[in-house]
Amino acid sequence: MTHRSISRRATMLSLPALLAAPAAARAQRGWEPNRPVQFIVPAGTGGGADQMARVIQGIVSKHSLMKQPLVVVNKAGGAGAEGFLEAKGARANPHMLVITLSNLFTTPLATGVPFNWRELTPVKMLALDEFVLWVNANSPWKSVGEFVEAAKAGRLKVGGTGSKQEDQIITAALTKATGAQFTYVPFRGGGEVAVQLVGGHIDATVNNPIEAVTHWRSGTLRPLCVFDGKRLAGTEKMTSDASWSDIPTCKEQGLDVEYLMLRGIFMAPGVQPQQVAFFTSLLDKVRETPEWAELMQQGAFNTTALTGEAFREWLAREEARHKELMQEAGFLAQAQ
Image (tube, rainbow, N blue to C red):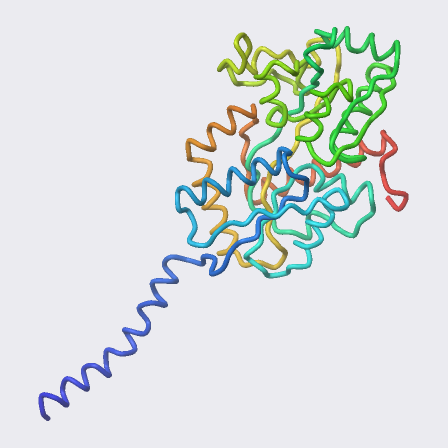
């Protein structure tokens, strides 16, 4: 056998191994996106979900956490139903994420739209968002008691995001707890709600901290209480003389109303476990960055995180809780 024949035979014998090498390397790396990933926000621009999605997008890009870009798309139609139904219809498409808030439960319960969270793939609870009772800094009310007294004397306008959603549920709970009647005024997003309160077009809001913090720092809004069973954790000064932890709970001031909201990530139905694992790992890396830590601090988030069965169990409990709250408020669709 000639030297050339031996070389050719050696090359032919090694060819399967060479072809198998990239496949083995890919298997070791696991699945990853091969085209841009659409990041659906089922809410308007400027609100808490939109802000969080854009922070995540910036972190992924800045730290090169994914080869493909993450593209944020707002689909707020029908109180978020537009975004949820698109994700539901994208079966087995791993190039789509949805950031969820409590409209994951409230929208189908209030509208009867054919959607349930179980028709998506839960990936990770990133955090829980707080709610604060905000008034204009020029208003005379500096406590919950003063605010409630004014509301009983004359109907006040409370602005919020959407109808029969989280903000209106809390407003209904305020009426139940105090006996005061409020006029609820819906807007497209939390950012717009805050601007309306700054402008004096409404009397109060129950916005998330991240939606109003800029106006608090500028001295145009005043927090009266937080709708949580305990005070917020942040001790860093957000204004010249106040931190998040300085805001009393509503319960401390005699208003027994509590409400926390989901900030979580879902995928389309029918995706593969390795695809879910990729995004779970990606979000773990996001949560390790200083930018994420800054968002959590600025927005006074509860940093609870869940995945897998624990996340599913939490979702089932929250769905049942929201159904009860909405039934009490008369917000359930007639078919419920």
